[in-house]
Image (cartoon, rainbow, N blue to C red):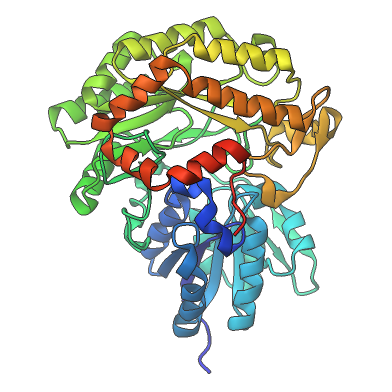
Length: 484
């Protein structure tokens, strides 16, 4: 039998739950995002002489595992690598163990936010995990692949077992990557791209659409945000690179709308202004969404972004209780935030508010303040997440002192109340969560906004109609996954 091919590596994006539940997953019906991190690493390795492939179990759950087994037997890669969130990590471990049964001798590599937070614990507790890449994957994984086994101690940000079984972590820091030197992600390796991937319903005007990342990290230190991969670093692509990236997506895949999946798209004003001017001087026929912090926008910039094709802006509100907000993020100024939301609306750009319920310190009073605050503003759409303390977030260390926490990784998807703040009960949080959403959709201005989507985003309405009964079931049960 031929030996595994050391130049061949298979990347896998796990589903994170049972296959039979995929058809009843409300999250998949509303939003399937391409695994851009894996696509970026694959492109980086391809440029350096490796042969890579990607299997996205989330986008194609029915076929993914069989495709993985067939690939292992046919191509016999020396390595299989998994990128996992907290909720998908145990599924990744299961697939890794299965890969070792199908192809004995294969090495398993894990990366992503969850293992970057767990670090050595991932190898101590899970025998199917052979190596962990902590932080950004491109350079570390490439250096690992070209370094002889006896010299792996030299590879920074790598965790492995030595011959005696001892777990070793070379935690030496790496210089930050220059993002403009990276190739565009290997979108072509994603099966049925871009059709298999969909932005959230009512969050885009045109198809096909996709996500794009133009920066890494965040300069802020909110209590609830995972910092295990990028720490406090913040880097971004230049305006020229960004424009070329969009032109590539338009030319090769016909993309008509982009969602910039950045924490802070407008942090560097000069970059955004230059990008917008390029989009106006040489139009691509594309629109875009982005996420911003209120401190980094003003009406002049918003007008420029609107002319360049900005269709929707998302802002992290988190809570309408200023005292609670001040416990978890910097510059908790809800008056300033409200003024900026009104400016976005005035500029003719849709506004999406991002909120959390169940933060440590939450109370019925703070939830009522959040509802009053949100409903007083011209917010077109909003997303209300259930606060989840992830291992890489600053608040995780002391979370058990702030309430009760059921740390079940497979359920940690921000759609379940696993943490209950002191003084609250889970049943009441669920009731208030449903009330918040129902109250939002009962507002005449919001209802009219969704009616206008008939001509502003007709494909969203088609998707809504196809999955109408699933959405109604979710509204009634408040459960992401329906049992089959």
